[in-house]
Length: 417
Ligand SMILES: Cc1cc2nc3c(=O)[nH]c(=O)nc-3n(C[C@H](O)[C@H](O)[C@H](O)COP(=O)(O)OP(=O)(O)OC[C@H]3O[C@@H](n4cnc5c(N)ncnc54)[C@H](O)[C@@H]3O)c2cc1C
Image (cartoon, rainbow, N blue to C red; front, top):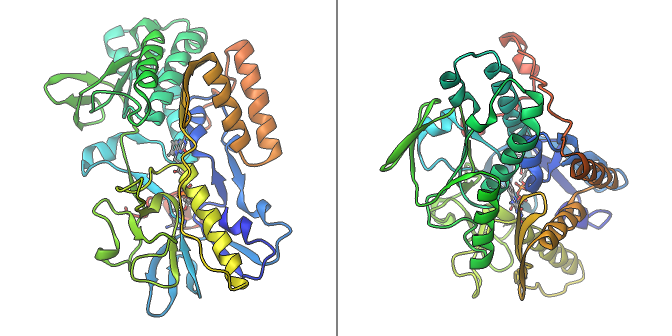
């Protein structure tokens, strides 16, 4: 957004990203459940800057910053900057549990969403060959951890697959045996939304047959059994982790420039604490406002509005205009549970049900980058609405790459690993 706003202006912009596309994360769960193709929710970054000579894009992993030398270190080499803007987003938070990190499936990126799609489909391709129903159950069960919007949307979408699609694909399997379980540590789903919306979301999920376990803590997972605090364990090969996020980090940032949760502390202009020429936007930063004493929620609107504010300030700077502090305008929150079932909380009104679902569809369609993507998503949704048969249940597996060829593969790799 910032690079777009500075396009064809008097700044030279170097945009670095470890992927060569922008991901629309709110719809990743539809990639994971075979409802949308990855290309429908991803947009090539280079295409955004076809007619903008002042913006250069490089696909690069930023690893380190040297503030005194004003350089950043990337896998491609070192780059000098006059002004640095960090907006590296957030990654999955496993709260220090290495087993969960090892065996669960997170969903922060398009690749991870595709992995989940492949995992779910391979489970049934496998289960259909197993005669003993007892042995089949752990393969068929899906457990989702985290009752925020991502967990709720994933659970609803997987339950719809189970109720309407999978029984037609695998008539030999009894899908009454497939449990879709949503686990949440607190006493409510969608914390932060109104009481009415939270209750409705729970009701919708139960209507779809999702087993919602509130006040439930996951203690451990070994790839087969989910251990719960003071409750019976659950057998599953598929544990989807939507329980938390943590800001991405960078070597070279001082301890005192970070909040305990890893978010980088910025002032009202998004300038990193103690610095003059480093700015941080979106999920990666923590900015305190009177109305948000603990910082803003890590949602898309904050990132968008912060980047627009910084762009305005940078452009105003060229004309010696004073900088304006950032003020977050909360436009509301929404989540969809399934067909015709969504909850919407706007600043002055809250509504649920069919109209909320329609508003959810419209808002998300408008937010997707690119006219072709909007059209693709619209047609896919219309088709799914009429037929209830998402057609993307393809098991396209990544090809095994021999070790000596790996250096040529641009694998998605967790920077921390
Ligand atoms: C599954 C899911 C569903 C969501 N649903 C909603 C929703 O419904 N509504 C809502 O408002 N918000 C939602 N969010 C949150 C929203 O997507 C984020 O708040 C928003 O994307 C934050 O924008 P950002 O620019 O800070 O980070 P991001 O959009 O995450 O962008 C960070 C970019 O930095 C790149 N990057 C990271 N590390 C490096 C590195 N070391 N080197 C180079 N590049 C790097 C990444 O590739 C990425 O392109 C959702 C998030 C997820 C994961």
